[in-house]
Image (cartoon, rainbow, N blue to C red; front, side, top):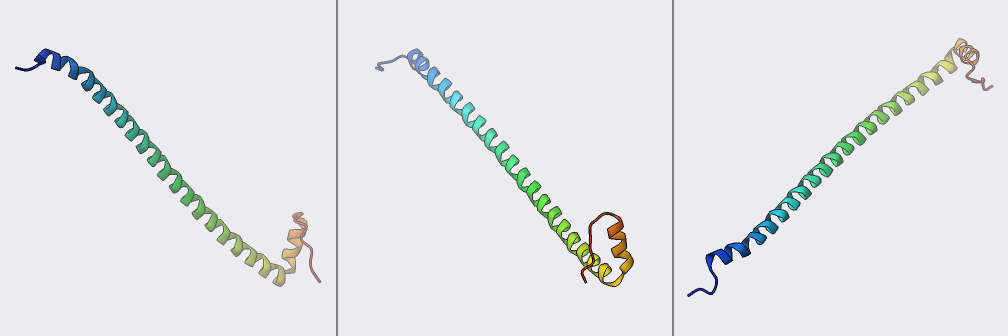
Length: 94
């Protein structure tokens, strides 16, 4: 003969079921938070990569413009006058 009835077993298992469900809710919440963190991390990495790409493009353009400026200052005296009239304080080196 059993020492406990089916009713007593059911009564004991309800708190356990409740605890189990609470633990599952917490696990699901943590998984959701982790997924959001991962998505934010990926978004930030993509944004940083885009910023780096734009910065590299700008550096290339700056190098190109410096080369054009050097060429024009060496070959066209009118360009030097233009720079001076624009107030860029560019002086001829003699």
